[in-house]
Image (cartoon, rainbow over all chains, first blue to last red; front, side):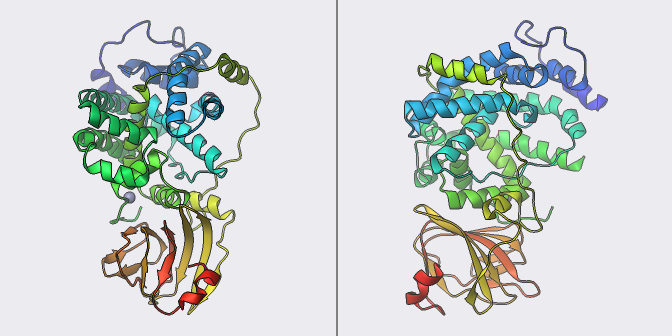
Length: 222
Length: 212
Ligand SMILES: [Zn+2]
């Protein structure tokens, strides 16, 4: 555990002080210490960690301001009315608050975790039956904490590069990718689009995959 | 964890992540990911991409009422949700949830073959099949895509061998004869986006009755 954290600390970037809601004066238990040391890049993930560890309402407010208008836009684009979209967004935001203890920053960035929650809720509502979801991996809390440190850093790096790759794509390709993940395309369209527009960011998704694959393997090996 | 050699195709995982997959195929994805770390990582990578796209979306106006409803909800006491169903024997929790019980409600199809229909809607159907050791499922083609995930035993057909956890993705033009391995009955989850059409044993007229 200590060794892992040390390695994590060596690879860290300088901490942007003042961007860390909810941490001032917090006691040094294992989790908050490791989260604080390795944080870089993604303030949304920091906010979510602060909600999880400190039940920090200011941090939750930041998550709300950032994600609510985007989630609503995504849900409308995948076919919901504005009112229905707001109902789902309400459930998603409250789920984030109530299930923050299940969030693991070594496995998912805040946006990925929230994206999944939104999809689950949206589909439960549209189909009026529970969306089939994979069984949770049973992982010892100990091993989870030990891995979070470096796991989060490299996941953030891959996701950041994925974001940059997406931003530099020609508009037409970026539109297709955006439409695929927003939920505007059918399974057939996604299948066809995958070989074409997605080709260019595929390598970036692969790298994120390598990272996650490694992380899951480490968790299993504990 | 057993070695799985036939995984979910990328587009299927991506469609699941994006919420663009019908219920029957979603059940196959959730059941496979429940027992395959490789595809779990691939799904999480897709969700990472989905999250990156979400962060970059244009903002739309939201109502003050929404804000009030969310922030009022923070201090509300809510009863904890019942825990998600756990795996029961060969059935991952995702399937137990779908069945609503520990065991499938089998119906005989004749010849020792049994099925339990799990879901049917206009996007497709999902069912469990029980095939006695060494028995062949009637030669069939299908109008759409068919996914078959092995839960117990194994089967083989013209395209290969499929053991526990493996998924066969059969395109609509595949005319195949899946045959259960010897030793143990093969139990699998099968999903299609069109009704199956058997060419063999079961006469066409019986199809509506058996719903196969
Ligand atoms: Zn797999």
